[in-house]
Image 1: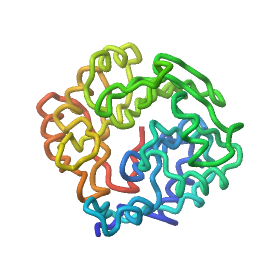
Image 2: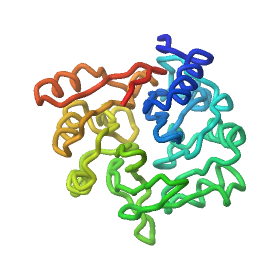
Image 3: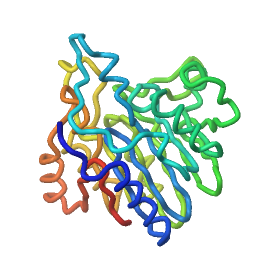
Length: 277
């Protein structure tokens, strides 16, 4: 198993130092999980900080063998204002991560897709008062942070019986920073045009691609992620959804090569690594 760039007490000290100095900083927590500190606020996007999927699929024909060690226990992350969950797959809505995380952060709100409310309550319990719901094309404010819902395709733009998107990405605006977290998505009609109007400073995009033999829904590949970032005018693109599970990963080399070809600024992080913004 690969070692994290930094973990546990070292990672927590890095987060504390950024807060103490009021530095805008972003950390990759593995898979699609990111921690953002900006303007005195802390946002977690799609944290997966357990081994629940490895345990669930042990001994099956689709093992979720972990490639890189976990960076921190969820109950050790405190001072969190908002946790955003893009959709209901367990690496984005993990009870073993979110239940202890929300307990450790009693004032934190959980941002979810409006279509997923019933599923979220079934998985996480009676947390109705902590939910903030959003759909594609809608906006909301949580503790001074502006959030906008963006439709994602995983593999398609799937909607419930009321026309609400089951898979979302989120635009967050705070402290003069605009950041797009894709959740899981492939390219779809309207994705680029809906993002261009926000002029995101940072785009967090998956690069593991779509391979039917994996028997899971797919994502952008590295070339597509680089081109999307360039198309929407992102000042920086950071890849995710790789190096967590052996069966569902990709090398970032293709992504990096395409970014260099396009002149698209990028930063590939290691698990637990942060970057100043």
